[in-house]
Length: 258
Image (cartoon, rainbow, N blue to C red; front, side):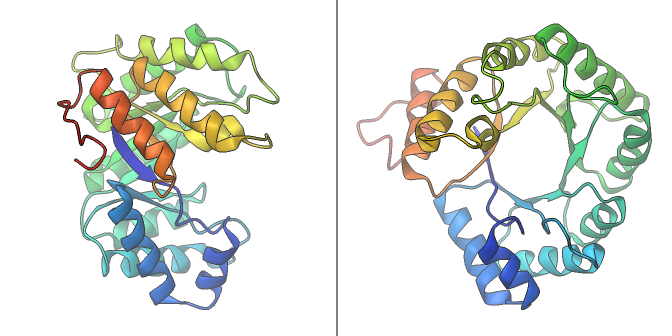
């Protein structure tokens, strides 16, 4: 499974402090630690309330790239900051993210084409997040079809069924699992699937347990990637065990270290 680290995000106080102080060492040490913990992609987010978001995003991207050689995910709702981050990267990035709203697709799909980027597609539109798997799949098909109009193949897309907090929307867990399976039948080759894992446990107790359990369930339903915390060793262990049990990785007695 593709592990996308969520930690380089201004929502975390320590990261925001480092951004404010332009503390390159803190950001670079964090990036190295996340890669060493198993991250394949680093999600880069300036956080909310940043006045000069394009400048900050450019600084973050260049700072991280000076320390590690992995793909970056540029994560921001601000189009100027997105353009800055994608342009500052020395290699192709993962754009995080478009929705099924026409304006966003018409802005972000051409950007993805221009820079050769992969792109996350959130299954929501002007009406919000659908209440069922079929409606999520309809939005996913809309985005896949629109992407193909721009020459973007399904293999460049990451479809996100949008996990919701179990404490507020407990009925949505099974619908997310159902949607994941449906997404794989949209095209051949199928698009990738991704989820922001920590959303499911937001404002709950036993967050690590809920995250770990739901991740295993989603992997069994076809999940390809997760935005998560790779420094959570029990979470990563669950990923490795699931890959063995789903016949994605070869079993060895020492599979956790392997």
